[in-house]
Length: 300
Image (cartoon, rainbow, N blue to C red; front, side):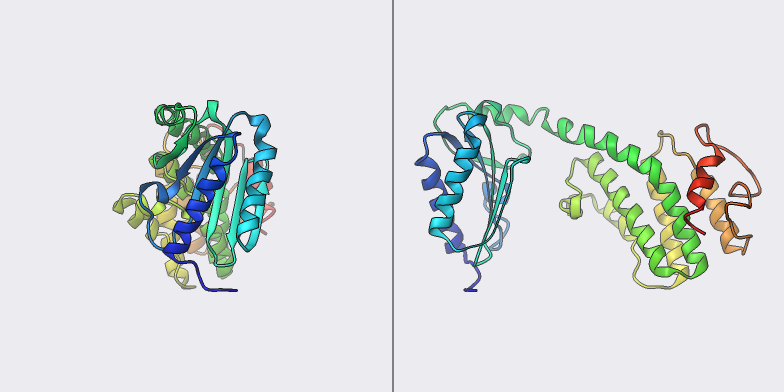
């Protein structure tokens, strides 16, 4: 493999893609997105584009055209095309990455605020993208938020219980795994609320400092049971705060009693010992103990 790409290499690739796009009459506009649209984050930033086509029917032809032009000029180390997402990903031998999305120009829309129209034969794409910003975040995050809340309500309580049992038993790697699962759900919820991309924590650095500090309070840095209990308690409080107003089968109070029972050396919970949280048998409005018993079998 040759040397790692330089800023000059990136500039040359930018110019080549622009030139190749202009040569194709079916490409109505080329839009740069990502950090490059506002000046690049640093010397390792990649190139991201959206190609606006004369029609969706042209997509296979134009995707093949761009692949051929780029492969003709550059040593492509990796290439992937995802037709369902209308996306191509290129990585050159110098590790410069280029991502290109495709769509009809009549439906042009900006998923993120940062974009720059490099050329536009129609003279309409930029205005369409500007207007789309008025509703795009709600379109993206509104549906995602509903799904993430539903997933969290269904899963967090049982995962937190699994983590508590694992700490109690000394299965500390299992406990860490359960905590990491719940933390991901919590971060997804935060991302939805702040309209930030949470996959792989992609934009989570942009959260307010108090929110990042709260996430840090759930980090696990070792296998000390006392530290794991602290992380568990912090994560329980945070995720239930984020789910406030939504129906979770097991309440935070019930979980805290369950933790206390384990820490105090209470009887081991199994499918024969009746309902969990033995002393109160309190139920939430949507909870039948049958569901808890069904999950318990996995923990024994």
